[in-house]
Image (cartoon, rainbow, N blue to C red; front, side):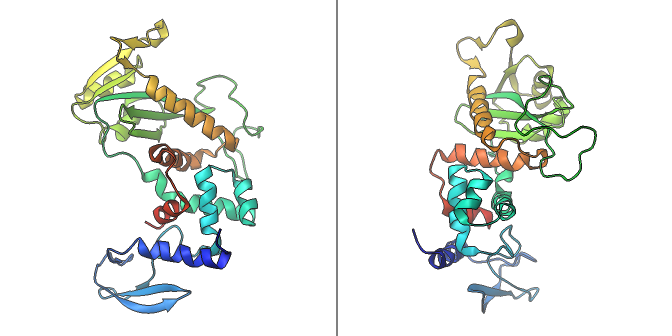
Amino acid sequence: MLSGVDEGQQAIEILEAASTAGPKCPHCSHAHVQPWGQSNKLRRWRCRSCHITFNVLTGTPLARLRKRELWLEHGRGLVEGASLRTVAAQCGVALSTSFRWRHRHLQASKRVQPAVLQGIVEADETYFLTSAKGSRKLVGRPARSRGTKARKPGLPSEQIPVLIARDRNGATVSSVLVDRSEAAMKPHLQTVLAKDCLLVSDGAKAYRALARTLDIGHVGLNTSAGVYVRDGIYHIQNVNSYTSGLKGWMARFKGVATKNLPVYLGWHRLMSRAAGTLTAEAYLTAAAA
């Protein structure tokens, strides 16, 4: 492993190499820029349009973060899916710093969704316990132990629904819903479902209504009556398998704040899509994109 000083320089080189196509002004998006010296070991540029200077970190989640020499070590913790305390110990930083770095590095991940779901698309919901983890004040309920379960499965006041839609090629959408209605699901699926896809779900009315609204094919399985497969090919086993893996992976964090749930869903999508090929360098580059 490189020394801290070497890793700090390596982080800079990785970030600057990612913009080899030519930096654009983060203030006005103008492409005509000129070199403008160096500051804090980062090359600076000056926009010929708005005349403001910037570097590769300006306007990104990594702007103004310190201890650059530890960013790659932190990225290795992301690759491993390690807890905040574990990463903080590995990097020798405070828990609050570990938390801030994680959420800065993963800001881009929550926007990473597939462009299209095609062929047979399976859809289902799962639930996560509502959590105000990290909040100083709780409204409407007493505090509870981390990692506990809801008093009653599916209780709306205690759990947040998450939509999971996955095609047979592995492309996956995972989004937090306000409820299980068609109106809540539509914004998350209407732009990604191919016109010729076939949506397969349980018997919930919302999916049938959504398929009708989007004018796509739909197969609803009467799972309450024990029907889990139709004609040997129509089932939701793939999406349920993904959900099982997601829930198992999330369990290590012993409760995620509801406001941060989209970040963790995006993190898991990245890891699932990369199938073990993600690197600390890749996380660093994505964070500054």
